[in-house]
Length: 589
Image (tube, rainbow, N blue to C red; front, side, top):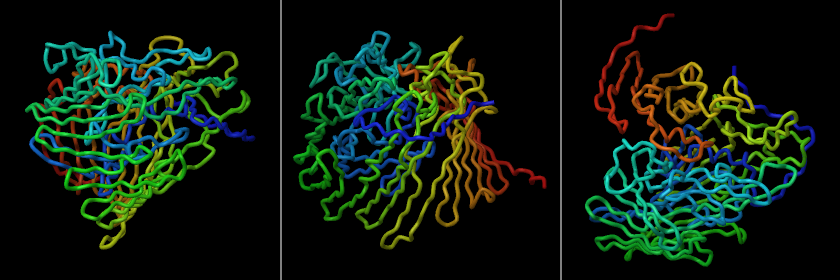
C-alpha cells in the first residue's frame, strides 16, 4: 500500500506573495530530481529540438558554425532551455534567452561565496552551511550539486571518487572527482580571473579540458521555509569555463574571455593550434551581435520588451538565409505558486510542491533557413517518482504546519512538458505529434514524516513487482502511436527506459521492445558506487552507480529477437553478447 500525494482543497484564496526574485525550497524540487533535457537528447529533429521522454522536458540546440581543421573542430552552438523562469530577475545569457554551448562546470552557490566547491576537497566537496538572520541554510538547501557540461555530449553530475580501485588516467597525481562516464578531474592551484583552485577534466578518450575561468549568472534568492517571517539568502549560478581543450595528439583549442568573475560569460575569441580563429562582438546589452570566422559572419538580432528581458528573434547566416525565432513566451514561462499568509492556509504537504495559481502554456515557433516551420506547444505537468521515503524537514509534533514542511527526498515537481509538435512549410506535408504523460507518484509504504530508526535514505523497493513507472505516449502522423515506459522507483530503476510499444493505437501494437538492466544490488558486480555527488537530496543515485543494459527483447509479427550481454568489464561495457531469434507460439484465445 502506498501513500499518495495529498492535494488540499482551498476554499479561500489568499493574495499571491509578490516577493520578486525569491523561491521557497519546495518550488525547486525539479532542480533536485528532474533529469535535465541537456543530459540526454532522447529525440531530436531539424529544429534542434531534444525531447526527454522520461520527464517530458523539451530543449533546443542549434549549431550555427562548424569549422573543421586538423584535430579538434570549432563548433559554435546555441541552446534554449524551456523551464520555469519565475523569479528570475533578468536575461543574462550570452544570447539573451539562449545560451552559448561552451565546455564548463556548473553549480548554484551563495552570492557571497562564488564557486565554493573545492577541487582539493579533503573529504567534503560541498559548499558551506551559512546562517542568515538567525536562519540556518545548509548546502543541501541552496545547492543542487556540480555538473560538467560539454557541447554535444550533454551534462553529467560530478562526484567525489570513493574507490581507490577504479582505473585513473595515471598514478602520479590525485584525481578526487569523476563522472559516470569515467571523466576524471585533477586540480590546478589557481584560476585565471579569481582566487581559488581549478579543475582539469580528463576524458576517457584522452581529451583534456582546463576549467579555470569564472562567470556568474542570476538565480532566484532562496527563502527559509518559515511562513511567520521570511529570511532569504542570495544565490548565483557560478560556472568554471574551459580556457583550453587538448586532445591526446596535442591538437588544441583556446578560449579567451573578458568578463569579471561576478558577471555573465563574455567569450571574445576561439583559436586553434592550426590557425583557425572565431571572433565575437556584442551589443550594448551584452548579448552576442556577430560571430566571424574571417570571411564569413553570422549576425544575431534581439527584441527587448523592457530593461530586464530580451529574446533572440533572428540569426542571419553568411549566405543570406536566416532563422526566424518566436520563442519568448516559452523561454519565459512561469509557474506561480500560491504562497500562504498564515498557518491556517493549507496549500501544500511535505511531498507536494504546492498549488499553482496559473496554468502556464506557450508556443515556440521557428522558421528554418530552408523555409520549414516548426511549432512546439508546451504546458505544465506534475512529474515525480515512486517509493520515496517520506522524511519531512520542518515537521513538528504534536501540531504541524504543513506549509513549512520540506521533503528531504523530493517526491514530485511541476515541470514544462511538450504537448504538441507541428511541422509545415513549402514542400512539406504538415505533420503533427501529440504527447501525453502519466505514471505513478508515491511515498514508500511504512515511512512517515519523522525518521525514528535506521537509515531513512535507503530504498524500500528493490524489485520490479513494487516499482513504479513514468509513461509518455505519442500520437503521430500517419496513424502512428508510441508508448515509452520508464522506471521511476526511488534509487532502483528511476530514469531507465523499460519498454517501448509501437503501432497504430493501444489496441493495435505492432512491436514491443523490452529492456533489462543489471541493478547494483548487494552481491552484484556493480554494487559499489563510483562516487558521491555530495547532495543526498538529489537523484544522484542514477550517476553514482553503473546500471548496464543486460538484454533487449523485440517482439514483432510473432517473432522474438533478443540480444543479451553476458559479461561486463569494470566500466560496465559488455565483454560478450549473445543474439538469437525465435518464432513465438500463437497467443491463446
